[in-house]
Length: 356
Image (cartoon, rainbow, N blue to C red):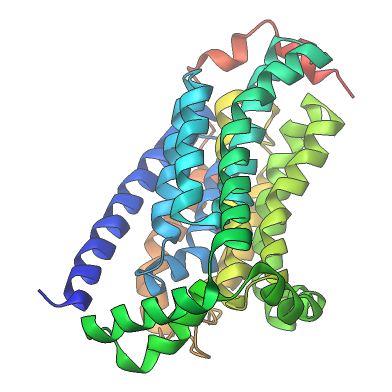
């Protein structure tokens, strides 16, 4: 079997698993939030975000696999198995180091928010909560030191190039792939750091990505702020942290999309942990989020290698309009259902909501 065929099969399998897991998480969010109309609107906004477009475009990358591992860690953390969740994150570091600024902070935020329900965190409880996360931190530290101190870049470059040539894998990409595996962190930093500000202030990023990120982040910030200002500040930091990858990486459009996944994970954490009554219920919130989604779904998304998505207005309308009408019906013609979950009745919830 040709290498490209094997890669395609594995990539499609990971892609389908990602979508199945994503659908499961979406159902959990809806149920935990009591089918809140604003939460449903935020989920639709995430569905039309550039991140969802790029999950299909970058089907051969590790992004879908990293999202799957992050979902797994989140489910384990929600069940109280934080050490197992941290072990999954530690393994994920060796899949791709992006997990260090994407999945790891999001799961830490979830665990911290969940632990805060038992009352204000003193130093001892905070230390005990943070201890499991030493595993992924240690894994990342080992990987960084190994690549920095012990890897012979020139020898590795020659080995990778030789293996690619012998495999027959896309000859025109052999050298660029070998370079990506052997360029040091310092070299990436020197070349990409000057481009950080231009990238995060780019007109495309500001007009296409920022409204979507801000819309979901603002919604999650409402119940999180009631938990305490510190948690709201941590939420903002966690959701924007993936943009820091611009200082060491060049795949701009892909990195622009990472905060969308971070805000989705934050929405999941808030829906599972915080009382559903703390989410906004006003229809104006849904109108704002749906309005952003309606504009976003007709914007062309920049892809890798200077390409853009090619769907025209009829195709976009056919893909998105049924879901848009369903969300609008739920937002404006139905009442939100009260959540049957335990989070509304948790007596300790009032303890941390008054903090900060």
